[in-house]
Length: 336
Image (tube, rainbow, N blue to C red; front, side, top):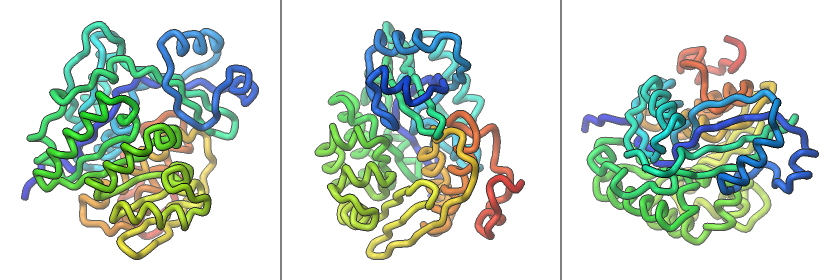
């Protein structure tokens, strides 16, 4: 079958603002380091005011959208469904997706601002996110195109959508459409707080529909209730046939049926971890939809993630610096 898209991504359309802070700022403002917290527009604005005068980096973002853009940069084809506001940030978001070549769909939500995330990056490159969903919280079933899902190899869903009953219902709608069409379903756990707060719904969806699961070791520990990496992975593998678990600079662990494979990471100077999981997923999904094995796909994912953590921001400036063949043969991310 000829597909129009390698991946149809579903998630929150968010405009990111990154600002460097120290750990004292997080402590003084009661922020839980390394997590994503949903906040009101007023709370977000108050935090931003306390950071007035500090250098900042802004860009169109959102987890699943970052993955869709990454797939395009790798040479694939991607669509993204999300909801933006009828405002300046919404127009910026639409332009950014068009420039990246991603097919973007989703009507504008009148009366709600485009979603935004204040991303606070500490000296150890860890990111702490304060997110106001804005228009993203109004994502509905009508924003999802079952026809496009059917013409895609994979439906990719970010776990952040389980944060509200409305968007969880959209996830179920999209997964049902994918299952009916024979489209593979991939899910990212997205953040430990999502698993902690909405774990029952996430586990139910994973067991019932998901073919391919992405997570990091912290999310896996919350999902499984186990501390050791290998034990967490074994528990997740009971619920999903193919699991990719990232383990920081150590790379990733892949559970494929009854077999576990370790993919080594890359030693690069870490500047900002924002988007690392998104780009890892982009590499894996591109690989799997272009004939690579899970292990080869994991290697490509680790390469893309290594590139993104060595820069500021969640999206690469352009295509990969070296051909895929050289990556699989052992090229290093920063040697090009």
